[in-house]
Length: 73
Image (tube, rainbow, N blue to C red; front, top):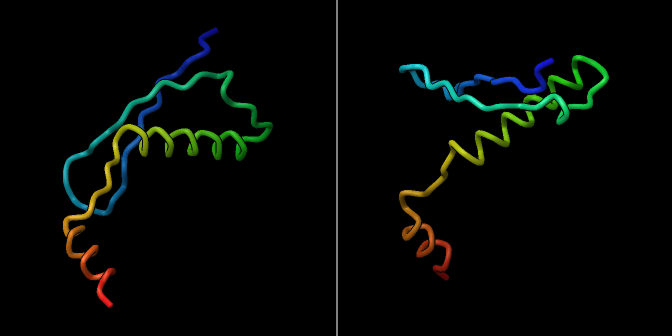
């Protein structure tokens, strides 16, 4: 029996353009749900964590303006 599987997922950000699939490996031992719904919730939590940890970088283009604005009396 194979205890690992490659999952393919994509970010649906609403912008048109080419597909951007991401791949990750999951292990059967990491899931303990008793219903399909539990297992689906666990999988999407793992996908969310993988995306945020490996594929997502947030930044502000106007950070200096924000800092100036927020400190104004």
